[in-house]
Image 1 (tube, rainbow, N blue to C red):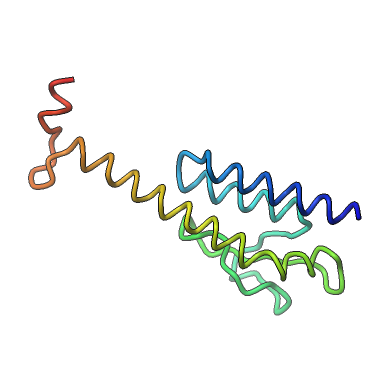
Image 2 (image 1 turned 90 degrees about the vertical axis):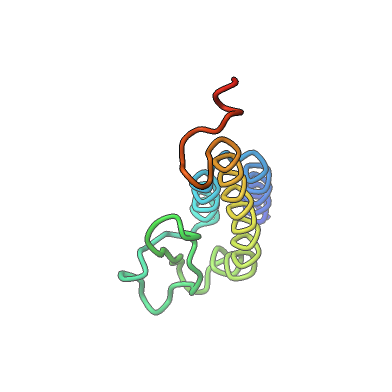
Length: 123
């Protein structure tokens, strides 16, 4: 029961955090902190054992990273069940944040020449 409570707390904190993330890097950090709280360890793909869960949790914000967790543990069962869903939610948040950054940049810069546009200069 205690491990289930940790799982629910970690997932709830991740979901609330994704709504408040200011950058793609923030969203990835939240995902990776949640994995730690659930008992997983992050390792670069190049150092991963055959037992690693085959899901990249870097979401394109750095080198590929996967999760290792002990076999036949509650943490592994929880991560195997929830990790694909958590990664998908985090990926959607990262995509929205990247689009927002691109729109903010496009709204302040001339797309053809690059300098600040008139709206920025008027401010």
